[in-house]
Structures are given as C-alpha cells and as structure tokens.
Image (tube, rainbow, N blue to C red):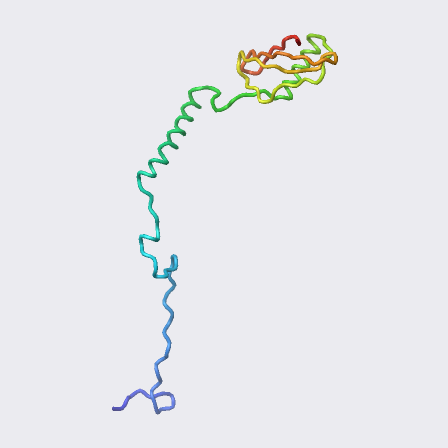
Length: 147
C-alpha cells in the first residue's frame, strides 16, 4: 500500500514526534501517593473544643461583667511613688516645720479611701515613721506627725 503523504524529499513520510507536551501545572500540596485522606488533616472532637473554649469564654465574660459593674476593677489607681514621697516631704517641712529629709514610701500603694500605710523619713537626722491615710479617691492623703 502506498501513502499519498510524502516527506519533503518526496520519498518517505515524516515520522511523528517522540515527545508529548507537559501536563498543565497542578495547584496545591504535592502528593506522594503514600498518604490517605484521613492522614492529611486532623480533626478535633467537638467535646475537646467545648472543654477548652467553654471555660475561656466564661472567664472573659466574668471579667467583662465585673469591669462594667464595679468601678475600678479593671483600672486600679495607685500612687506615683515619687510624687507621694515629695508630697509627704512637703507636708513635713511646710506644715509641721520639721527638718525632714529622705522620705521613702512603699511603691504601688493603691488609692483606696480609708487605707493607711507607713513611710519612713529622716527627721533632724533621726529615722522616723510617718503614717499616711488616703482620704479621697482622687489621691488626696493626710500625713500624721512622725513617730
């Protein structure tokens, strides 16, 4: 049988190419064929999610309710230690007319009406204890005479 198709030289047909075009690119993770669908993604049980998320949601709700219903629950006012020490020193010098120096008060004292705490100072060269009483929520305080 003769073919009607002839090559460029007129004798034999042109052979088909020995290669094929590459397949289109695949998107997503490469598959090695060794994993099964259940190994690819781990699922958490509904009970575990509820056991962990339930208490977290309860604590957040409690903090939110307390923050909205109790003034000062989230925003604790504390004395600025340097300003407190300067205020006590000023009262000792200006109001009690004492030769006071080196006032030291505890840091982080809360501004709670009626609370009392002690500061120390050098009065005329001798160490003395001064009682401070908080009288208002805006940070006003009374300074007792040194003991």
